[in-house]
Length: 228
Image (tube, rainbow, N blue to C red; front, side, top):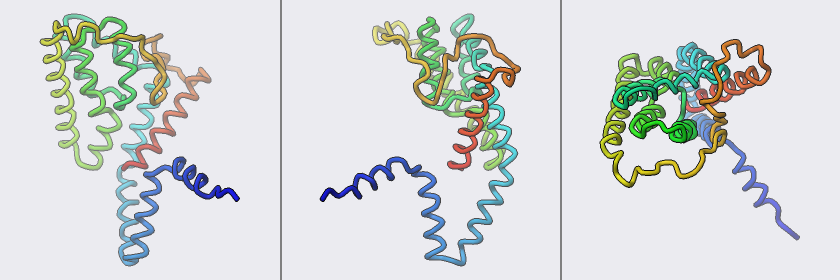
């Protein structure tokens, strides 16, 4: 007789979101081992979430709007002009762009394919995952504006450092061919050709863009609620 319990359990474990599972487990352990602390813990969490809710809502809507309109294409302007100016603008925009560490990879690959200087690309690459509008608003709402601004400056500073170091080493044979294959767009985090087309601000008139807005808003909301 074949035992199917192990494969079923393994399949359940693979499909289960570990973050939500950990949250439920911690609450259950608190209720079991320290019942008196369970209610204050839930109350504290709910209160903190309530105070942070306006920041979460604004961040979710802002990022979803940028994705739906295609406004991320405006970031390409940071790569126009002299390389020093490009590095500075790329680092600044990197600290403001709504890209996570995996979303930024296809965008960077596309920039390299278009012939953008490696120094500016590196500046954007380093600064972008460290800070974005959602992270800034959430950080300011939980840890204060001072901490959020300091982290933004640190992200931009790291981008500037990496950009200028890369520019100085750009003539090395190591950087002779930074992109050996055509980039794949639309692989991680649902990124779709960030440099093609102009922004469409009335995205709700386009069913596909409206669906993009809804999908991104839901995914970002769940993500922020899960990891707060």
